Image (cartoon, rainbow, N blue to C red; front, side, top):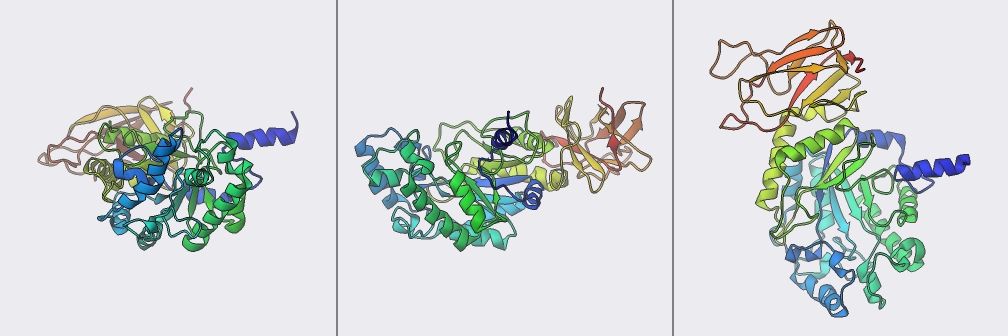
Amino acid sequence: MSQSLDREQDRASQGVYTELTNRPERLAWYQDMAIGMYLYWTVDAVFGMVNAHSTIGASRDYLRSYFTQLPAFFDPKDFDARWYAKLAKLCGFDYVTIAAKNHNGFCMWDSATTDFNVMNTPFGRDIVGEYVAALRENDLAVGMYFSPDDAWFQWGRGKIPARALDYANPEHNPELLAYDKAQVRELLERYEPDILCFDGYRDATRSLVEYSWRLRPDLMITRGGIVTPEQERREDLRGPFEAHYTIGSQWQYKAGNDRLKTGRELIELLIDIRSRGGTLLLAVGGPDADGLLPRHMDDRVREIGLWNFVNGESIREVRPWHVSREDALSYSWNEAEGTVYAFDRGPALDLGEWRTIYLRSVRATEQTNIEVLGQSGRLLEYRPEVNPSARWTQHDRVLEISYCRTQRLYNNQKWPNPLVIKISAAEKGLIN
């Protein structure tokens, strides 16, 4: 195999299909971040249905109704971008990615390229612009999702939208590519996002990715620039990568008939992704038709937020340890501080309950200190006679740690989510 072909295949395996790539310093900046909030929303959220995909294979009558009638009902009267930004900040999200344009072609900003945009609805406000202003006010990085596929564009030219046809792929449709470039230029020049996520076929965004990097060389591009697995746990991946997941079963708001992941499932997902150097982009199932985040989704976001509030240092500015998982433990590593974080994924502990864990991949040194994040290790509520500080012994090949759960986060003294053990001045252990 030639070296050039070998390099091309290697780049494709990393989700890169262009001659250009993300700058190393931007990759490092991105990899320091743990979690992004995905606000996935388009004109058909008025029904709480699948985003955009209902146009594919649809009848001409359905398409006519979709494109001409739905915008007249898009009026999220309770939408407040500042509320979403504050929620993301409170709950420890590092960035927010907003759906600027979905596969249906509906633009959530005041675009000069098409009338199929949010300004031509009863709502009549630039949603992208409001999001960006609110995120900047809260010192959150701004991400944008953009689909180059465009059902409105196809329908307006007498085509039946179909993602499997070359006509729907801008790499095979110069007119569509020029149209997409004009929209991308609007977004980059007007709003200056920090992160851009392209959707589409495997290689459909090559020209748009290169075009974006030429306009903004320091732009961080996730899909199109790095691997972005979707609703899929990839054991083979080590960062940087962006894992796309939903809280429920749908990217945008779903009106009933849903099954939500539990808070623990979501937190363990975050832990797994960070232990391998990736970043989680979590679609929170809103806004809904009125612009609000449904209560059941809000509950999940705040449960993640509480866990982040206690344990945030273990997932930010960290990299994978030399072993990502060991029995019921996962790891992350702050190289600058020489600190290892062990995430205990075992059964939840009751308040005052002890557990002993055994680590082969970590060695304590004379300077090591071990503690449970969020806990002082000096007091167990209502039981002043107990010394709840963590204890450890470094054996020949095993680090033995005993610790007690002492922090009450719920009124009933139960806490179902993983605890994090911080091990300072740690060294690599032998696992074989």
